[in-house]
Length: 280
Image 1 (cartoon, rainbow, N blue to C red):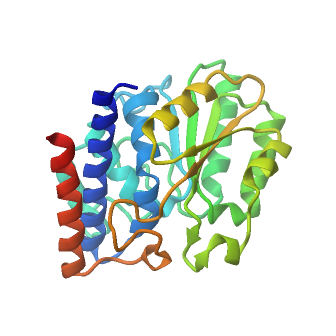
Image 2: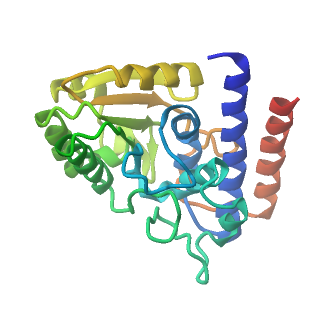
């Protein structure tokens, strides 16, 4: 990946981070921490990897994406807006009673969303179904999903992992956002899941471990996933919860809390400074 492309992805992700924090602040509700941590992977998918058309969001041959950790709508909605699925101004309708952008990812009213999610574990199951449908219909689209490392404590996730391996869904690529934190604290304390690589290899998945904030590594991982035959791929993306906002980083308290006005100004100043740096 050349430096121009790398900077463009970083700029897009930083703009999305600013929108995400503004959305949660404006609604006085939402989940900023895990939204900020997965935005580099999400930006890489939508602006570098996935075959999608904002003018034809229901194209039957498009690649699909499922945000399995559905509370991270503040990550997905800005990326869809920046990709051109709908105007950025619509983000102001987030979590408003008179709005159409609910706090959990919703497909019927938000253009570009492929699956409504929120009950943890169900998203990856839906992604498995989409990938299986592609196989049955002999389509060449690919299916991508992002899960949280807290989410994988759900048993349904592992049932989905088993099903994906059984049906040899090499058109499925899951990303686990391994930021080490969930609503109640460290995942290692709440429900330890490591070693994730060995567990998923035992479930017959192709496993790739990357720095989830490294665009080159993410691009290589998703390109590698597309070459794997006979099994699904999982990208273990090591990330920082709250990435990009200093007081939110590595702080479980920002899993599901809105910043106040003073905190919002601090976050805005940091993110706008990063935007200016990347634009300069």
